[in-house]
Amino acid sequence: MDANRLAFRQWKVGAQHEISRMLLDPNRGQLIPRMLRPTTHRDLRGLRGRSNRFTNTYVQLESPLLIAPVGVQTIFHNDKETGVAEIANEIGLPYILSTASSSSIEDVAKANGNGNRWYQLYWPQSNNLTISLLQRAKSNGYKVLVVTLDTWALAWRPADLDNAYLPFASGIGDQTGFSDPVFRKMFEEKYPGKTVEDDIFLASREWEADVFSGAAHTWDQIQLLRNEWDGPIVLKGIQHVDDARMAVESGVQGIVVSNHGGRQLDGAIGSLEVLPEIVDAVGDKITVLFDSGVRTGVDVVKALCIGAKGVLIGRSDHMLFDLSVDLVLIGS
Image 1 (cartoon, rainbow, N blue to C red):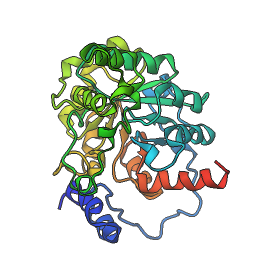
Image 2: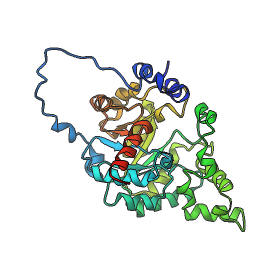
Image 3: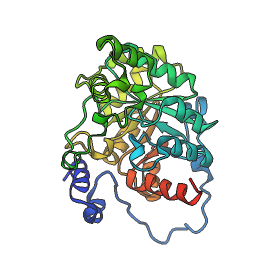
Image 4: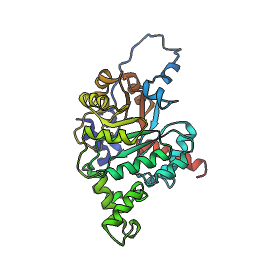
């Protein structure tokens, strides 16, 4: 079974299958133990400084961990993305804001303070809308642009359908668009006399139609992003060596080897399975980050040992549950 089908099964049939999935999921990989080695005392401080031109030039990472872009965080806690961004600053981890956010770009930046924040783009079809989102992120102190490539159309997600989980349709997770001046102008020009707030369902459909349009972007369009973003650009969703090489040729500074946690392309290969060959091919030319299937520190260590420079953590049933507990404990 491939990683993606197993990922869907966890969402579909419930947590009782988690143990078997963890044993089989290629996203997680396996360790081969060695015996009678002098492992009692090791100096691991060098791992903290494992970086390349990307981190040295643009962003200093104090930890190999980054908070992955997780959308619609209001369903987990009332503090939503602003709460996670605030905690990320307190513990010194980069926070990556999802386009599918229930908080605005500006509100998250304010909550994150002087933290290290990145912006993840679900790439609209409208160039004007794309440029507006990038300008808002830049003016609010987001240092790195993370462009998700595998979600130009939302996947067929049976568990979401079974549970009637369609937050975007009712405006939940659409705050990035609803707070954007270009989107609001486009909506009001198409529907004279109406504002976004007058018809949330219609506005939601218009936002989804541009962001999750079903029309893929192409490599030559990366130039638009480079023209409009003067910081590092990271492409998320790379799973093929040739695409990793194309990323290098396109002039971006990083990639995230990711299969979207198994929730986007049914049948996709496990990310950890392809990480070694991608690192071998481009690891000396571009920053390689890792995402998907990360549940424990052991998973992080595996990815780092294989060659990833950093690991995105964002599983909602782990990271966001723990955050909810922390916020309760501190009285939020």
